[in-house]
Length: 224
Image (cartoon, rainbow, N blue to C red; front, side):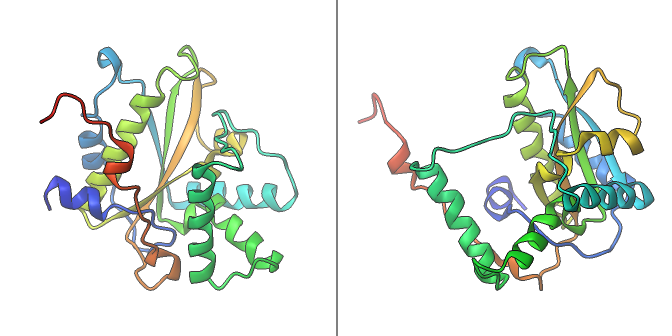
């Protein structure tokens, strides 16, 4: 698989087979991912990899807190989009496609709640990678670098036949992660990546998102 094929094949996977992913395989993925560029080679990323009973405990308590109405307390900034913007339109377009594939009607509050819960369970993946950065760094400072290492994780995973989903629901309750995993207070929990073998029969995994044509978002200067 060449790099262009991997980039075009990468997609968010929202359900996985129960097959375990080995420590050796994830190590190889992370070793490749850390070749990502970073400002002045600062490499502002660290990883926690969850599987087995630890992952089961984290997702169980995440769901308990969600269903109890506990307010999320993420350590990262929550992204928002203006309601009248093209960004919000794209988000809504994805949600409509997902809900149609999953047969979730707009008025069906139970199914919508069940769908929300899936993210807090890391989409039932057999493993999850939690990305950390240091609290000594500015809020925005490491974000570009973290994005680069996340993309590398997702692309490297494809070489092993694995799927991924970058998702913040898995870190919405950081106290849960800190309860089951030794994470120093000096570290900020940034994002989660669910990882495993894709379940090709799951309806939501059939989503094919579009991209804005390059001609609409590029200004060419100095070309003939």
